[in-house]
Image (cartoon, rainbow, N blue to C red; front, side, top):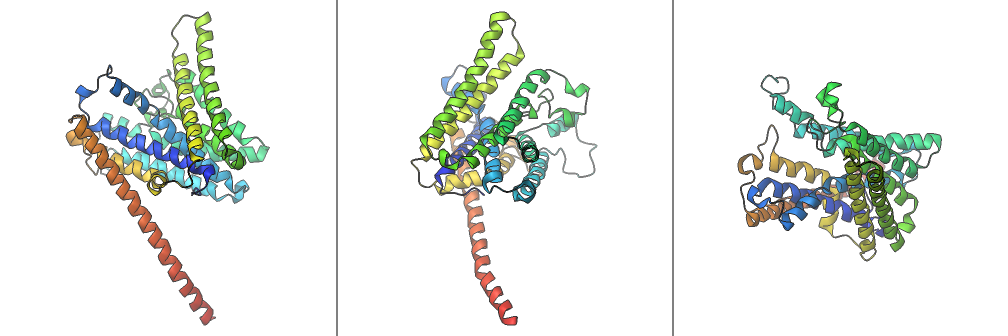
Amino acid sequence: MVEYGNKRIIFIDLMRALAVVMMVQGHTVDSFLMPVYRNPDSPVFGIWNYLRGFTAPIFMFSAGVVFTYLFYSKNLEFKNNPRVKKGIKRFFLLILLAYFLRFPTYHIFVYSNVTIQQWFAFYTVDTLHCIAFGLLFIISLAYICEKFKLNNILVFSSAAAFFVFVHLFIENINWNAFMHPFFSGYFFAGNGSFFPLFPFTAYVLGGAALGSYIARHREFVNSPKFGLRLLLIGFSIFVFGHAVEFIKNLFDSRELFWVDALNLFTLRIFVVLALNGLMSIIALRINRVPKLIRLYGTHSLAIYVVHLIILFGNTWIPGLSMVIYQKFDLPVTLIFVAGMFTLMSLMVLTMDYIKIHTRSNAVIITPSITKFNLVEK
């Protein structure tokens, strides 16, 4: 668990909360807002729709930052690091939840009534799949870095670049022709995957690079120069993408998919790094993160799963959008958004209350047991 109340990591809490807020409002508005309000020429809708494209990158990047910061914060050897086992457990949990949310039937052993469309929806690779494998890659690369004495920041950054550049060459390949759709969805978006590993794992690994940097330079993170450096790195990546496009246009007038894909990634990573830099500067003026914001970040996985079930349902639970999908005007939709945030807030506050009181009861009981054992002894 991230240590709260420390300026070195307050900006991480702010970024996690921002990702959760963007995710919840984005899904809720998309579920209830009538098509008539979805005018691409509308500045309001255009800005909202444009910003939605940054939600998943921010969410994934933050997951990479938090996990890797905690992984390296105690400066333990790989074999003695409890984060290795926790990370592997988290991998299996995320994968199970990802497939649970899309499981095509409430029967465990009978699948005769499942349609092809339902199977393809089940094969779809989404945010949880991507984060799960991102954590597995982080653990594997951390082991390689320790074994061969490599710079972990450089390795994580290179791995992120690998997923981006490979994506530029494989996205237009029909992977369904080579493998089962269950596996091909991890490689491209051709069968409906929202976030295939290529290139989206790059955001998790990019977050890992930043998380390892924070663990190694904790005091520097607590200065304005850190935020400015993130802005500069993000802008440099953005300029690189446009420089590639300029050079391509100079020698080749054809429209190439990979140039647009590269520009999209460099834009998104620039925004993600810029937001992290901005939040780190804001955090210098904050002594403590408000409790609800902290809880939004701490329980981001629970919020992700529960709000998706409420909105879209699964095999066992019907979601609201199954009945009232895109049927409301903007004021009513905003009421639904407020209601969703109220529910999520009550949920995380209840979880925190239960956790605190469970811990308090354990503290009260433990001394009594200890005293009893001493007497018996």
